[in-house]
Length: 350
Image 1: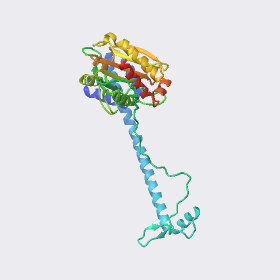
Image 2: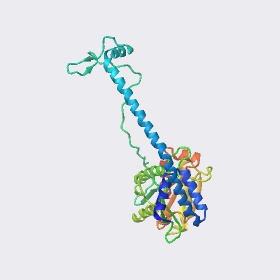
Image 3: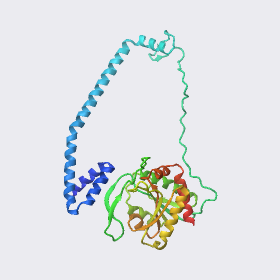
Image 4: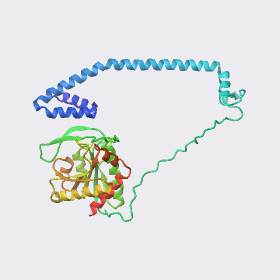
């Protein structure tokens, strides 16, 4: 397919609602490869035709708004001139409405500025004027008997990011499997929270807690507006010679009844022989800590970020499922990120 046509199709995808985009992906995956190019061309052509049809309506809407604004300005101007020519009478009526003496109108000072009699009037109110207070930064409490993480380098990866990156990257070194470099992730079925926002909050709390326990902590990202592929994230862990690489996720499942904590570990690399046992333990500790259920561990070669960091202890921690009502409510509670951090620290020192 021509590069310009593919770019147009990607641009259209970025504008579609998430449900329409998923349906389109499903259709493309289901159809034979030799049919996809023609389908994409036809879809792109129809999309732009529909957009052109909508343009006159949009233009008409803008014109209507402009006419409305002009009419409003004319009315305001008319009211202003009425007030200027009837200022004394209007002021007297205003004072009478609020219980002021009729003769106590706005006087004029020698310099022409309007003043309100010898003393300004203050109308009573039952509501005191609020005093703005500066926001107090949230601090993560570090107990005296905290786990000792001194000497450890821990890289924490808040899963996903705000925008898609449809460019493909290999899932594992030397494989034929490819995935999108980055996606925003799931959305809370009840709360509407975005996974990329939630995971960053968890990572920030975890970083502060781990540092309070003596560890050196690096986050793969500190904002949502980044463009980091899963390989990029794994490379940050490699470059910093991390002792642990913790990837935080809050997934979505096809079945809304699925809930709990699950851990994914790489099927290859230096720690593959006992990664499943350790991953299962991590799921249990976190589930107990936040009041959830452990769904155990999955050892897999399907996760790009794990495959490219399999030379260190790497864990993809799914703290819950945003597609499940109960998990969604649990994950957005203020103390759940802290409880998660405490549980992971306990796991590390076991």
